[in-house]
Length: 350
Image 1 (cartoon, rainbow, N blue to C red):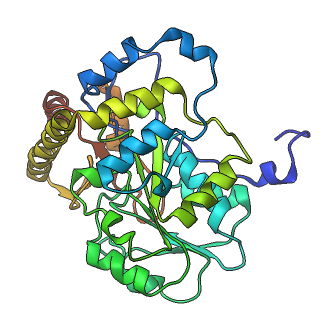
Image 2 (spheres, rainbow, N blue to C red; image 1 turned 135 degrees about the vertical axis):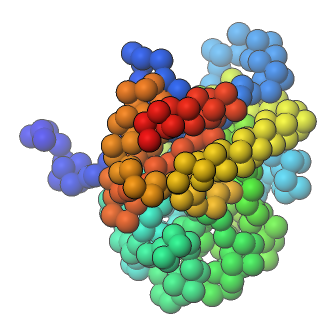
């Protein structure tokens, strides 16, 4: 606590990211990074980037990337907003669409940036309890609210809602609904097809997970032009140049290599299926996942202790010291070799 902090800063409970150790070589299965590198086309784009261009500010509209995404998703460029990671896009969405008069709604077990942003922007919220199976029940989101955020698939559970459930949610509210699709490419149905019918729908995605570009910090929102203009008004009141030239070039290159994207995604999904069976054989309960991670609970071994023992064995997984899930672990789907080493370590521990 500092005497120089504002009253607001003193009250904040900031987001705590997963460990990114710099002093030890771990098998990292804790932050949902892609185990495979970006497309070779990304490397070519970066290596061939004209160095002289870096002395200029980037295009504040990210026009080339917006056009590339518009072509990829069959949308118009004015239906796309680009930000410095999907977290920034989400943060701008809070400022653009949530007034604070009524509480916004989101699941009680979910991405912990949601309540962190509420604290930062002083927005009221109400967390809606997941059901006994840790699923979202969209009927719980009816009634007066200042906005709704639905992660699909949810994190840390990995459980996805159907497109019909998202449609039902949209049909029963007039407030802005944000569908956070950071992990959608690993098995969930995107709400993209609903944008034309619902002017209050904003879909947020990222290049970090399925495109292997977490280090580039690129996220984007898809929606009708009115919502996108709201985001631009916030962005241009904060930072007109959020996306750097190299990141934009890398993202465009990744979109052009669909074969690489499909190959890496399919390998992760295949390894996820293998790991689910292997963990089940070791007496883990494995929640159904449409993500690049598994959410698990062992029949008898406490999750906190297991987390610590795996770390000593050189393997990082994610532990959440939170109500209802403090005996669960979230395990990123690594390469087949990394997941194999995880299973061998678990056999030794258990």
